[in-house]
Length: 562
Image 1 (cartoon, helix red, strand yellow):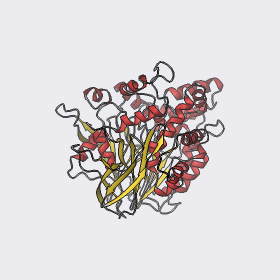
Image 2 (spheres, one colour; image 1 turned 90 degrees about the vertical axis):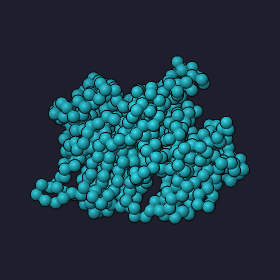
Image 3 (cartoon, rainbow, N blue to C red; image 1 turned 120 degrees about the vertical axis):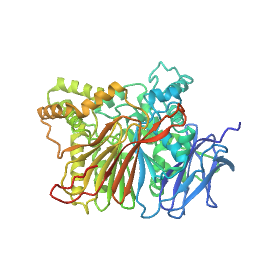
Image 4 (cartoon, rainbow, N blue to C red; image 1 turned 135 degrees about the vertical axis):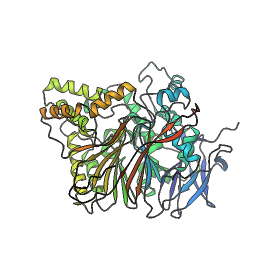
């Protein structure tokens, strides 16, 4: 059997009306070409720590066209794989004015798709979706899938990842079963994206991504004391550099438009290389990653895209934090100014994708705001130390635990919803993951835009059943009245608005979909279901759905039933 020259990919990444970006990892230095519609586009590979990558930009395309494509490596057909059983991979440019349709979700572990893997981690909702799309039928294709964090788990590794680690180092020595360096990150991405069904789906469906903590480590940048604790270890520096460098290669590079890539310093080195030999950017990328960790203002991971009358803002809520005790912020001043500049009206729908839910269930929001105040010294130094331990133990580090940032964004959203930044959108919807259960909440308003939180988590990493009960109690039970009391005891002001649940929570592995439709913003959640014992070919079943219709005017303020 001949070994394919491709390690991973092709992955369809950034696509707009006239261009598309195809990403691959190859086994050796090579010339990579993409053929579609009688044309050919070529790019040379670049090297990072012994691995080889190419991003081929297909330009000069016509809007609204759909074409099959093939990938050659050094003149030899590498994709599609003969006899794969999957349909041809396609490049589909956006059609000007077409309403957006997208999928989204977060938290996906990479374990086998057999009976054992499905028993411990559930059916992979992304893979079930891939198989459904491959089967054809009347299910419409999205324009984009947005992965909202924890695409890989660098700290909670699978047996397959641990086997790889054991083959190259003593797994007893720090960091143990966690990832250590770039080579291990490269293998982790291989495990995540090499399954044939998911690989085919990602070769056709454009994707956009943002990290969350497990892409690096649980509670990444939760506080200054957490960061100092990590930096005191013998292994953290290599880990964070490898994590951010590999994120740039495997995830972030494909998020960028051709214009944005042209302004990226690492990409400029790659694009300027015109020799026959392959350029190696390992040293430059490591220095860049180290600088991005030490000075978040030196690089922006967030990005913004407009799809006709819908704007999608993807916010980095991990690396861009300000952890200084006197200026704690989930999003530092530079990043907040960038977000503020893009939070405007004039769109039918405004989507804000942030890995951490902006609107937690109110009870949990109160608990997190109380914990922040206590950890900052509201009850004294001894209580502050206890509060910090509780913060890390219970992952109390969402937007509610950074009150200054929460209130600043809440003020932006209120202004947009009230028409103070241009015509008010029909909806302002936060898309999030992280919490390992899904739900929809809405701010209680009687006029202007509807402000909604939609969460899809996990794609494949369900909470144990005991933890589900705890999460439900913390989020929806006594935590609401008790949380409000303790928050006030620490002199935390009430939130600037109230919100309540519309749907949920539910704990299935899910992939959510969103569609801009004439009747409003439609959202639905789908899960994989095994019928008849065939673990490798799960079906796809809808779990929940909601339509966010435009607000009606009237004496009741227009809150609609769903």
